[in-house]
Image (cartoon, rainbow, N blue to C red):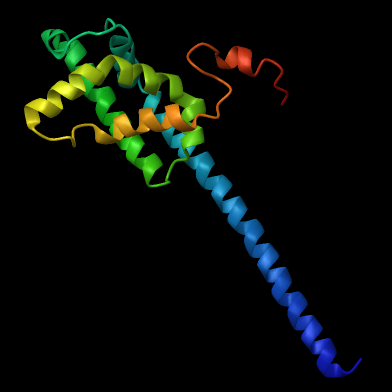
Amino acid sequence: MDLSTVANIATALTVLTAVIFGLIEMRHARKEREERAAFVAVQAILTPAWMRSMVLVQAIPEGATAAKIETDPRVLEAAQSIGMTLEGLGYAVFARMVPLSVIDELMGGTVRVAWRKLRPYVEYERERAGSQKTWEWFQWLAEQLDRHSSARTSLTVGAHDAYRDWRP
């Protein structure tokens, strides 16, 4: 083997090693980003204000009208707080800043319940404003969760059952 062939093989191996290393680093960076996104999502929902608001939203009776929601200032404020938070989260998923799978596992049920309870109010607000832009990403997020859910949990199966056999 002449020196030129050895140099070509060494160059090819160097490039191949760099490509493999780059791919491994990209995978590692993506995983870190997903972990940071999950942490930010947890921070967004584990505030006292979020929890108080979500309790009020979950207590809204099925099929409650916008007028019913607007009669109680606390419920109205909670609905707006939850809607705005989920609006931002929906856009973050769309922009691929937060993976849908993270939201699905972490709070998919919460998003679905919130949308179910607040949908009449959102539709009323859209009609009143004459715009479909009101809480569009909140609705989008709920619909994407329904379309693409791969979570083992659901509104009828909690994490305590789905991951009963989990090992550290």
